[in-house]
Image 1 (tube, rainbow, N blue to C red):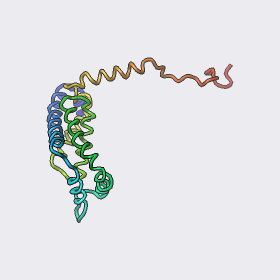
Image 2 (cartoon, one colour):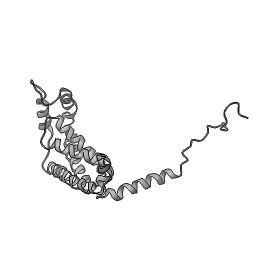
Image 3 (cartoon, helix red, strand yellow):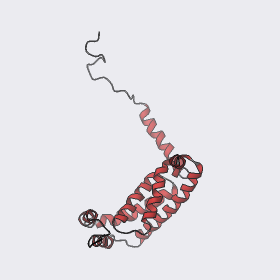
Image 4 (cartoon, rainbow, N blue to C red):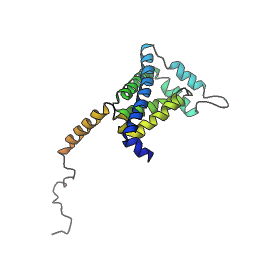
Length: 181
């Protein structure tokens, strides 16, 4: 019942718009600060790896291994990916463009930050992003998705309209089964 309301009700779309803009502002603010402030994820990654030791580690060993053997050696890539990703997620959420995908990518980043032992606002943002993902198109109804998604659906359907969905018979086959007259 709540799921149906979240996905279809006009009041839900307005509430989701408020949530979406709040999240978008949070993401774009963090992304632009990183883009303009000389962001380097190396210290964050090393700090997360250090949190994986001791009696009660904040970071799981498997995640620390990923950070140590994949993320840290590729820190230059992450130095670009994180601020750019945060900025694009923020832009998508504020404008309501590809809203569900933007919220999903925000969830991925929030989960990565949580796995790395940084709570901050990540848990709250993750929960709010879940509502947007569950609401799907209704979360972007008061945004550019109102026009972008129907346009893309039209392009997709127009592209496939000329194709016959039934497969053609194999060469040399007349479509009759063996033993048919």
